[in-house]
Image 1: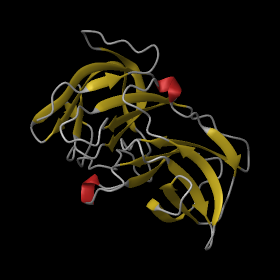
Image 2: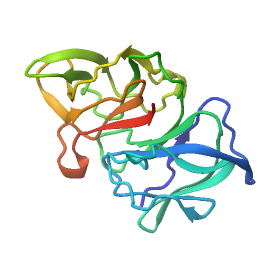
Image 3: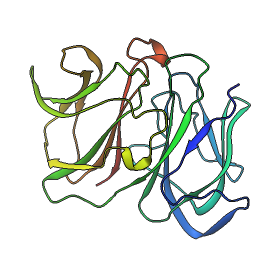
Length: 240
């Protein structure tokens, strides 16, 4: 059982000892970006809000619904793996924008303490013929600087970003902001490669972005790992 999981909260978030809710709903998604945790479940004020436990590299969002609609304000969130409680805390979520809660490991060594990062998602639509994306590297392998490519055909056609692990104690403000780029309507292969090399960490084949879509592209896991500990690449479609 893992104890003492630390939480990193967005600016202005305050923990309180009592539950405070209102009649508005918050849009919240959860992402398991760890390599060491098995599948996790989430409860909100004691009620399960995830139908299927999240394995590493999985989010609570679906193709038709990016976010869970749950009471806004200060609420008790309980996160478990099996019967073991990992987190049992009051957190604050706003009814405006979106809220992404990311779980990630801070080390490639087994037994390290995972952390939780809560981000506010900018859901404002970009201009026509654009999309917005941010690239987040949750892989704790500090040697795994990652290049993000969009590939159409046999060549690496667009290098979108290059980034290192977000770090053990990242401030939410240090996470890459959403960037607007020209809309590409073709089906692309999304690749994460070791920076400056042809070494492929992970890929998603034939992905078509939605015009005016808002996305988080997340790289997690261990580049040298296998199975649930191996590299994972996820595209979270927040809005369009």
